[in-house]
Image (tube, rainbow, N blue to C red; front, top):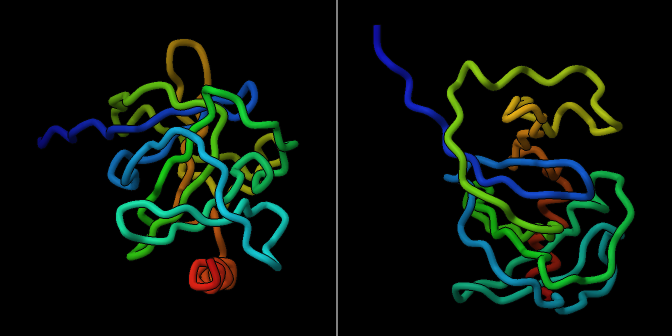
Length: 156
């Protein structure tokens, strides 16, 4: 029997909830700087930033997931994610740690979980008595939204 390596997750907070993404999807964690505004964006999109020689669209993940927006705070971060060949920035309340999780510690998502659409979820992780929502970064945006963001990046 072959041992399966633990999965490395980057954890962060949105409100009182803990979330995680696969470490291999994370290009960089940046201190929050206000993205440049771009006209005619969806309400959950903040604008664009420049990082690594690229124009990176930035979405407010709180707003995208149906949570109220917050004013910028010192602990706020932008996580730059690799989504396919593109980079996408997501604004989060704070970034916490990188943790190793065994595959059997990741439970499949229930059909409805606190108002989040289950399609965004890879699963739920139980860790030290709490639940961590494991996001599927490839599904946070629809293909149509990805096209809109690519167009916004060229306007930025």
